[in-house]
Image 1 (tube, helix red, strand yellow):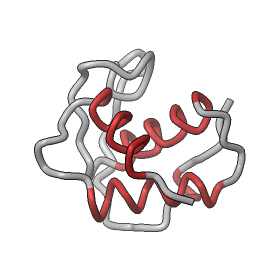
Image 2 (cartoon, rainbow, N blue to C red):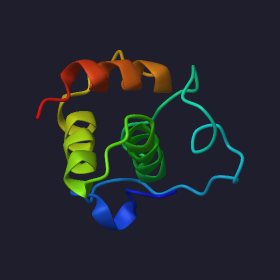
Image 3 (tube, helix red, strand yellow):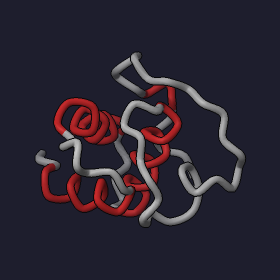
Image 4 (cartoon, rainbow, N blue to C red):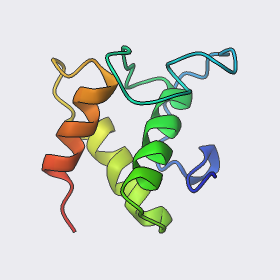
Length: 93
């Protein structure tokens, strides 16, 4: 299920690389896989994955996550699971 897609992104300065369908950077569970904050496919993937995981249904919630990642994610946060934990601690409504 896709709740958040490329067309929902607020920012436009992402790189767009091609990934294989089973690439862990854009498929599977959030784990110790490296995360690249300026890669659009990875941002869309992690936002969508977290929206499903936490049962968020509104695009504006995805935009809040995207803005957190884009503007505030500390540089030492480099793995998907760390991004998940950081967003959970910093997402405010």
